[in-house]
Image 1: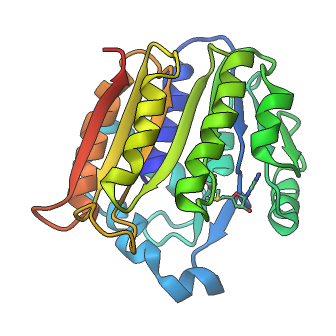
Image 2: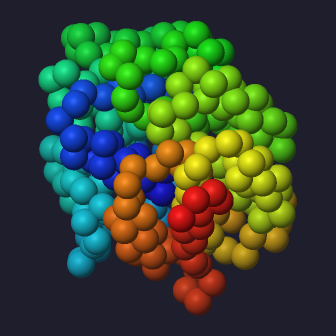
Length: 267
Ligand SMILES: C[S@@+](CC[C@H](N)C(=O)[O-])C[C@H]1O[C@@H](n2cnc3c(N)ncnc32)[C@H](O)[C@@H]1O
């Protein structure tokens, strides 16, 4: 939810200018998820997640916008059955001249993605390694926009090294792009080297938005998550701060959950 609320806010911020944009999703997934499907029913994660947001009152604008985008994928906005992944959320926001490039390595997921967007000429789906795509497909046309890097983090610490190498290549090819990188937080200390790398990567502005639902002290469970934003749109922190605070209140352990917005480089 953090990732997708931030994603919607980033696209909206880029769309305050009329010039078209390109969205590149390196790890796109299948595009949308059935909450009544076998996997979702097994974990029932959505009950402690998106369902808490559906009935919440007084949401800050960025969170209300994200909720509206989720609701738009469902016939009944109060009892959702479809949860949109990043590709579908962004597709709903694309304007006529905007484009999207979606990369997904796994056959079944990529096939589902291709089927979902078959009739949309603005969207290209590639079955390929999303990290390698950064070296091959950047800079995009139009040369303005956003890259989401959202890997599965199967190898925890090792994934950061892969992200750093891919980002270095991406930034050398397209220094003006906005990059949003999602990461899990188990122990806070595990994220520190990545933050240091971002602070020293040569970009003038890097913002980290984090949501900690429990104390970040156990390597065995997901205690929170973060999104690092390289070259964030102007004043995006004003939209994100109240949205993060509201998510912490809605989703986290009372008295423990907290949101953080920190500049790793710049302001
Ligand atoms: C966390 S999910 C992506 C979720 C999606 N971005 C969303 O927000 O709805 C990660 C996806 O990355 C895919 N994947 C794993 N390794 C990959 C790689 N090297 N390149 C592209 N996709 C990969 C997995 O199959 C999985 O669907």
